[in-house]
Length: 244
Image (cartoon, rainbow, N blue to C red):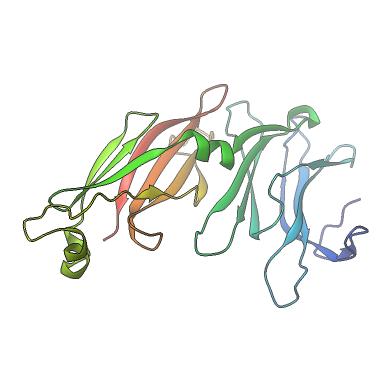
């Protein structure tokens, strides 16, 4: 039986102590018996919170059999778990989030169904990043255009609150651009389960940072609501969050 505490055991491949970093209990296979869900990993550097060889483990509450669900990204920081119904079938799904670390503040996010002890990936952060692309362009008169390349959303941002020093590097005294400038949108930087309708079925709230000339030049956040449509998570709402 899988340990129910953070007591370490030994990874036979890397010979590093393994620990449980996240733990949740809930029925994820649909048989009505609560299952145990774990995220385990090893910390190769004693003075660092970095975790590698991350694994997602489900222990069937009825049989005690263990199942390992593969994760493409298996290294990072602060892995977390959430169990909740995202599809409306009345059975808990499994959400996994791992911080990448570094200045980019990216996250590795997954949602799995484990109905009938069979893992099915419902959400993958890489697929999300590939699907949602944006065109970011500075315009005359202290504005920035944010347009979805493969969607219908578009935003016009006033950046005069950036200050005169910042603006004078980009615009002439008449408010005209000195040279064309393009910004970018960071990969997924946070994914949160929210039950907007309070019906017991969770949606996903996704955050992406929009930046200008360089990564630290933040302009705001794209905030998207993703709802399961029977086959995939589809964007149902989106806002642009300005920095105050």
